[in-house]
Length: 311
Image (cartoon, rainbow, N blue to C red):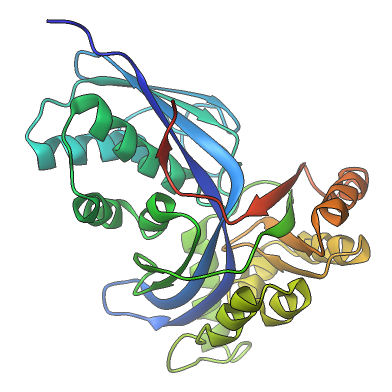
């Protein structure tokens, strides 16, 4: 038998341009209305022959152990879990070497782990020849994590349920952003827990359901950056800032640098600054890189496609 050639796939980071969070559900998740936007910051997963599974991680967040700021290199990594899940689904041996090359910062509210899992499903589907239907991959993705289905789909999508039910939506043209990662990573469960605590204490409204996303969807269809900026919502911004007060300084710095609008991306600590156009994003990124507030600054564009094989 010939040894199959390695296969590589990449998947993008995401920004939540709308994140409305409802009350805690009986299953421990929150009901969400979110609008995902895939942006031009990618992780790559390369798969090759192996006896059993092995995993290596390089690039952003490389380290050992677990916790914010570190990427595990064992079966606790979503990449490993994605490989095992696809193998069980397809009835094939879980034999492959898995190599993750990261440029998406870790624990930054950008769904880097979800992107890795989505890229793994796409790469291994091709490498193992499992020929999984798109619906099957989406089902497997939802079992891995709330953001993984969107990492497969990419573009712009409305997410409901706990975020795993994704419906692609139309957007007129590109949007330009500067992503500034402020300090070390934040735990998503901790931010949701802080939201529940602040609501229980009366520091934040406790809505019957998540804020609907009609305003931001209309702004995306219209294509005007100013309209999109006025419609941005993130219910996790206040609890993220409560846990990390320095985020308020980061938000102010982005606004002072000329952002059309600014918000915390997902559970943070990434600050997503919307720019009027590509040139404005480049200038803003250069200014923010010099203010000493962010450890990483990237100018990105969206929407971009979801997980895809590389030639």
